[in-house]
Image (cartoon, rainbow, N blue to C red; front, side, top):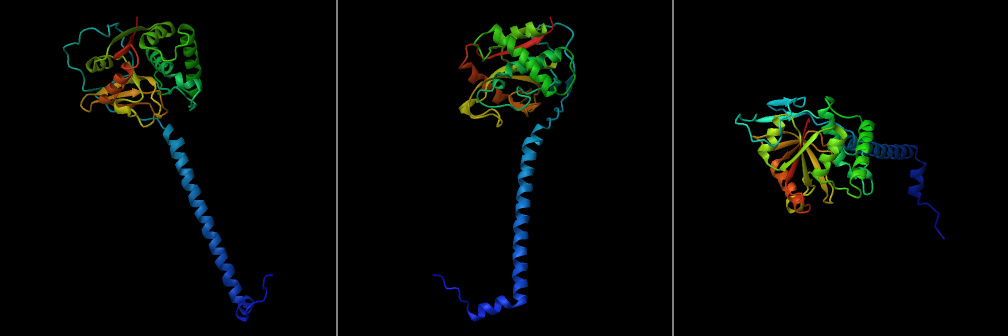
Length: 282
């Protein structure tokens, strides 16, 4: 049994109006403080979510370079001919309309967009040679266009998900009428093609030397991938890319050392070796 009797001092305190008012105010202040804490925490969480899911979508600005190429070359110069004696510009940026391979951010094991990198690179290449001058594809347009490319890929190369560059070149010819050239990877040749208005497709693994991710945006699983190179800065040792492998991949800068290591990692897994793909008009 509990003792319900009150000590005289306690009873007097409960009957004191000032004591009652003070306790009520204390409780009100405590509740107000807790409410303020919840509001601040909620605002902080909302701010984080806004930054991660909205700010991350903000397009990365185009790099500042000595030369900006906004249209493909008219002349059908062979991409692999001997380098010209004229020095290359110190930096070049080729404006290519961007899409990620998953425009609606549908990522995860089993989602078909995990295998859309080749289609995304082809869509960007085909649109560039077709004169598209937009900054980005609308998500619905990109998704539908890539689905058509993937459908052709699957019917032409049944059961093959990681397409080698030769297969990507063949699909590029069928879809866009472009002439593909596969050549050994060479940094000077990459820069020369970019200076002449031809983006370059490189095959990589998403983890390079020592198993390190080539970009923090990639997951822990090391997978085959292709990246569209759109520019360079020779003094900084950078290649600018439209990397479709993550939403923030527009104008994404990679050190050449990182990409070269990722190409090496790819060459160890696939028989195509250290190669690059360049398209040109017929």
